[in-house]
Amino acid sequence: MDLELQINQDIKDAMRAQDKEKLESLRAVKAAILLEKTKEGGSGTLSEETQMQLLNRLIKQRKEAADIYKTQNADVLYHKEMLQAEHIQVYLPKALSAEELEMAIISIIQETEAQSAKDMGKVMGIASKKLLGKAEGKAIADMVKKCLS
Image (cartoon, rainbow, N blue to C red; front, top):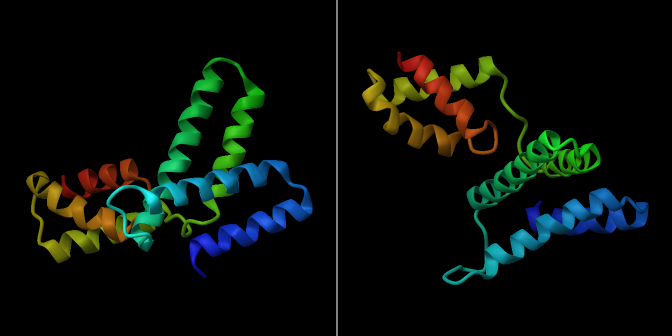
């Protein structure tokens, strides 16, 4: 099912269930989708890759805000941001385990015939696209460095 349709359906379900936290999270996702679709130069539709990038960006924003709240001992706001991140995470593919990520990176390294750390950019370009939504960029980069060294 299309992400936007799924979000709209889940908003209706959250409204019926009177789940205010989930409703707030889903409305933020819907707003981000609408902004992305209507931005200047946009085609009015979003590719799956763009949708995954958008969701990852929203989750990253929530986690960064939560870290700030945690350092300021604002536990209520911290938990609210983490809960929103969890609600958004549902729409991303299941995250890869460390072993699965390593196997995927090794496969990409063999595919690109990368030999050393000099080839990291080539591997990262392909890995970022193939593993979009399945692993964080930092985790991908760390694993590529490990496998190429």
